[in-house]
Length: 232
Ligand SMILES: [Mg+2]
Image (tube, rainbow, N blue to C red; front, side, top):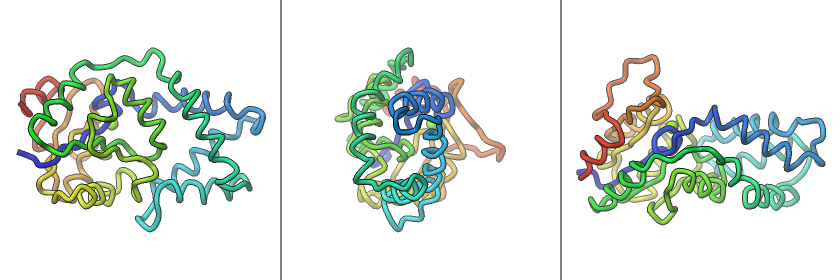
């Protein structure tokens, strides 16, 4: 039995892939900030500064990495811009999930992990503020309280696919990597780097599974229903 169970969100608990979501997200950003960025340049700038989080080396939070990079690009400070982004995430972001379905088995799987007595972690790529991640969780039919730790851009200093991200989770929850199980749909982002820090891996099989090019064999593999059985 694993002492901690980590769940990816997109394509694992939520039937949505990040790349499919990006056009919605960028459309929403553009609409919310059109008066400041009438030329439509904001999405590209946000995407470029997202790379600063993906390449973060643990020396600062992802939020700090984002705002330092983004501030330079647009010549304004975090203090000036963050309140505007906060109201975007609070007021507009939730509606970007309209039409996104939920998998009923997702909440059941998370509850099964909890019943095992495991520490339960939402290991979603920590490139968003907490508010945005909570919206996305609710699209999946899940409540934030179902998790002991939700990784977000304030509390993490690495992002996927850096193994440092999984190492930081293990350190933060006080559970050795070898006692953790990472549940994900993407070999490159979820399973390979989790294994690098000693975690066991569970590949969730669905139309969202991405096995990557390397012939990686997860420790376990199955549908969400199989995972529920495995955890029960
Ligand atoms: Mg995923």
